[in-house]
Image (cartoon, rainbow, N blue to C red; front, side, top):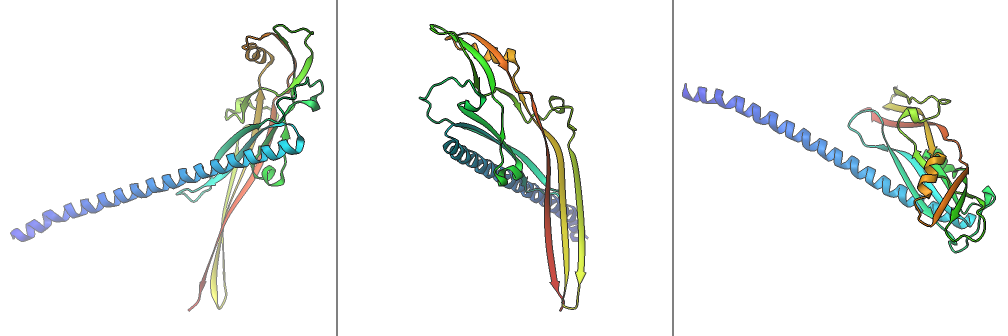
Length: 258
C-alpha cells in the first residue's frame, strides 16, 4: 500500500519534469533559430555593403566622376512559419575622384559627384541606376574676390525610403499590397509519387526619396564660418517609385513505389 501511494506521488512529478523539459527545448530551438536569422541578416548586410562599394568604385572609374551610390534590397530570411519573411537592407557609399580638380559646375551634366540609387534585385541584376538630379546654389564666401556664380551640386536628401506613407507621393498607392499563393500538385505513376509545393509571394509598394527644402539647405550650408550667404535656385522634386517584386519558393518530393 505504501509503495503504491509513493508511485502515485511520483507520477505527477515525472509529468511536470517532462513538460518543463519540452518547454525548455522549444525555447532553445527558438533562440537558435533567432541567432541563425540574425547571422543571415548580418552576412547579407555585409555582402550588400561590399557590393555597393565595389560598384561605386567601378562607376567612378568609368564616368571619371565621384559617385555617391545608395542600394536598397529586400532579402529573404529564415523563418519558423510557412510564409516568406523579408528584411529591408540599405547601404550607402561615396567615392571621390580627382578631388584636387576644383571647378564651378555651371551645367548639370558637369556636377562633380553623381548620386545614384538602386532598388531591389531587378535593378541590381540588370545594372540599372536612378540618377538623382542635382541642385543649383549660389554661395558667397569670406574674402571672395569675384562675385559668386550659380553652380550645380549634389542634392541634400532628407529621407530615403520613408516608412511613413504620408511622406510619399499621393500619385502612387502608399499602402503595401501583398499576395500569397500556396499550391500543391500531386502526380503519381507506376514507379513513384511526386508532390510539388509552391509558395509565391508578391509585394507591390511605393518607395520615395525626399529632398531638403531651400530653407534647410541654406541653414545646413550656412553653418560653415567661411560662408557668408547662400541662395538656392533649383531643388529636385521628391521622387516616388513603384516596386513590384515576386518571390517563389518551391519544393519537390518524389517517393518511389516499393
